[in-house]
Image (cartoon, rainbow, N blue to C red; front, side):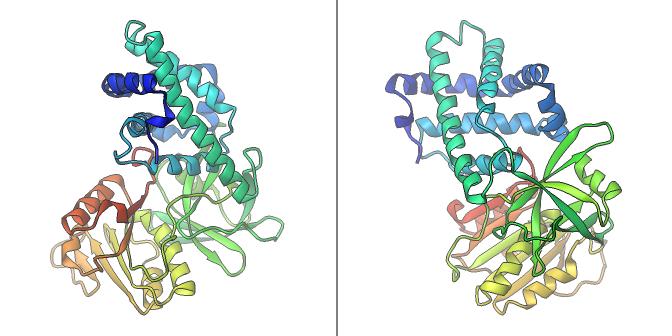
Length: 396
């Protein structure tokens, strides 16, 4: 647990006093930070940070949220959000972030803080206290990322590896599944159900862009599978340009949202859209290793046609004796014939039964996950039994 012991008493008092000011302005600070960072290091904008997330502001808001949340945790250990550090560490590891990059971020972030708040606010004492906050967070991340690299048998310079596309299957009008294998015919690294890989592509304009995709299956023939919905630059590139026989650059698997609870703990798996992919990975594992586990599966889509892996999902649930499937479609016209387990409209968890002691995993668009968390709370599920996989930096 984080606490003010990570800061000196003097620094903790300064952070408590200035957190409302810094936290309130950090939405203004982060665009200035990125402007300064990219001016000094244009290769980071071109080759590391996701353009789409920069354009819509979600990357800036994610940084703002993580820094402010960490500072809050230092002065209020009971505040929510302690898991954000673990999530950031896994994301950084999937990108090959190295310790020497942290001083670069510090330089431009603190220059941005002074530029926005002014030297009259950012006095020497304030700068010193917030420097302590930054390096406390950075040191934890550097240490945890070192552990993750070691566990994966790699390091920041070797986190990327080539894989060959061995099959391509159209799962819906907007979703394609890619089967991946080692280029040398060897064994790909193992992954925990729910984890993801980063995929790096070079776009037609020469920029290297990266996006994360959940591993939806690991075949017995040493293959991985990712399922890609056509949205954003990287996903659109994969749809348009990548076919069987092509080689992709991908990271080792990472991700903190995995099935680590006891095998007899009931599960409630909730997904929407392409959020089905980590759920599939979990269900394959449960069917093979924990077939007696009670599992309730909820998936939401616009229509049956847009429901990727629809038959596969039903088949997996049928392989698990204690599993039940519920699907909602919110884009169907009135009068469209439906049979169980299909329902029309938006998710309504009060309409189904699930164990009160279930651990809950959610993956989907941010508004969907927020709605699901609210409904779970209304149904008496405590927040510490809920985990979610975020495809968006803002959701992190």
